[in-house]
Length: 246
Image 1 (cartoon, rainbow, N blue to C red):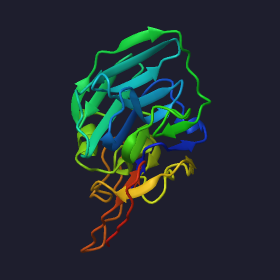
Image 2 (cartoon, helix red, strand yellow; image 1 turned 180 degrees about the vertical axis):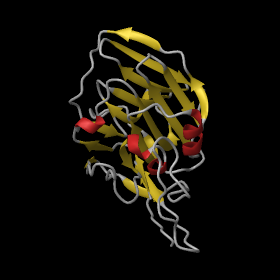
Image 3 (cartoon, rainbow, N blue to C red; image 1 turned 30 degrees about the vertical axis):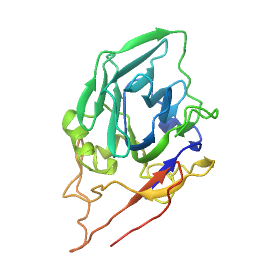
Image 4 (spheres, rainbow, N blue to C red; image 1 turned 180 degrees about the horizontal axis):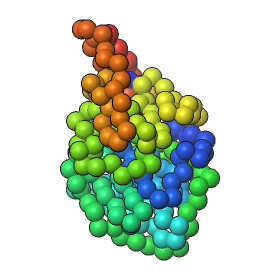
């Protein structure tokens, strides 16, 4: 199941594994019911990084706090509601910033503004800015964060439905499938919930493969013959329901 948000959010306590100062990739599946005129926050660690959609500007945006400046890259155009889409934001040590929508490059020339320093002590949020505003009205699933800049093949694999757990696992810092609950499967973080976060159908995701994808990959065990799994996700809104078939 995925998670469905409207006036609700998940909050994970700060952890050193979630703090990035040189490079990172953040990825998530999202499915909006509606877009606010302002920002709709998907994943936010204030003072470090933010992945969002700007409804008034009809653009997706990744924001990075580099220690002295705030840089953001945006693009992809208007995103329709009612369909699963995949978004990736990246920052690297050589000031390269990239945004991918559905596995395709959507932006790579950052805009900067001054006046905000990097802060590494704030919690990680999903679905809101944590101050009762900028809520995402829609669903999130398969949130992954890496201490690495994934290459285009890895980004494309995510957009085609590969689980973040299969993509460069040695660099994966955080992975919340958002199935039934919001728990992180990488370092064991369990979120607090503000408001009602409903459980809804999850996008189809490949969880087992012949091998991992990316640097220092090793092969996981194969699934049993005839095994099929259908998962659901979390929605911040009013829809409910869950289903799992194996």
